[in-house]
Image (cartoon, rainbow, N blue to C red; front, side):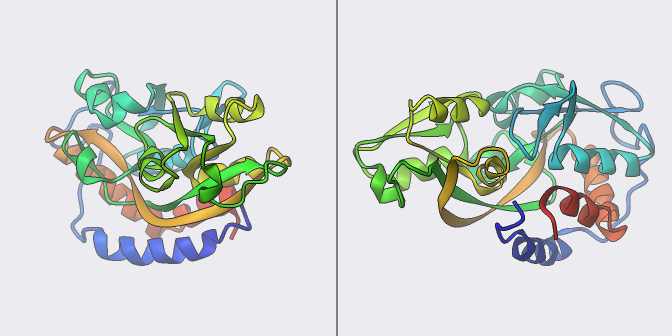
Amino acid sequence: MKGLKFGLLLVLLLALVATACSSETTDTTAEGPGYTLMTPGTLTVCTDSPYSPMEFEEDGAFTGFDIDLIRAVATEMGGLSVEVINSGFDPITSGTAMQSGQCDMAVASITITDEREANIDFSNPYFIADQSLLVKKDSGIATIGDLAGQRVGVQSGTTGEMYANTNAPGDAEIVAFDNPGDLFVALEANDIVGILQDLVVNGGRLTEDTTVSVVETYPTNELYGFAFKNQGDEMLAAAVNEALSAVRRAGTYDQIWSNWFGK
């Protein structure tokens, strides 16, 4: 991860969020004004795991950049604890996870798009992401054009799938997986020749598997946001946004970034 130009992305993100965040303040006690939580004193969040290094389980507990960040935000919101529910991605982006009361909000490296905003509301952006192509080092594949006639894996319902459908050769077979962890299993089994998905996740794989390589990156400048019930949790979203701004001002965001991606 340390060699993937995250420092530049961080500079761009900080400049973007400085203009995006509101200057208004919100009183965010454990049961804040205008919003209630499923469990008093606890922020229940849905995620889609594993999606290392953003959200995954280690020693029976959820961790990752997204998880550390939402815990810092919850602490700023009057010392809330965090409970993580592994709901899957489609229930999050469709809004059903929040609408059904499965969680208060979602934290899952969710790119903010117009299509998704029809189903869910977003926080201020907190991360800039690009797309990438990961293959085995001995695959002979160097560019997206080399996927002609080949099977390439994506996660269903993601911007990686959208990018592959638009930019891969017409005769490439785009194979969608619901579980993001299954992508690496399929690559190892030679069921697919490559994985097209967010750079932060493919880059994270390089630290775990020396047999693979990211051969191309695609600057898409996607913005991640936390997700909320559509037109239903404006006050909760406002409280989270204010806490996110406070986490930045305190330098906590920078420390979490450094812990996962280096400087």
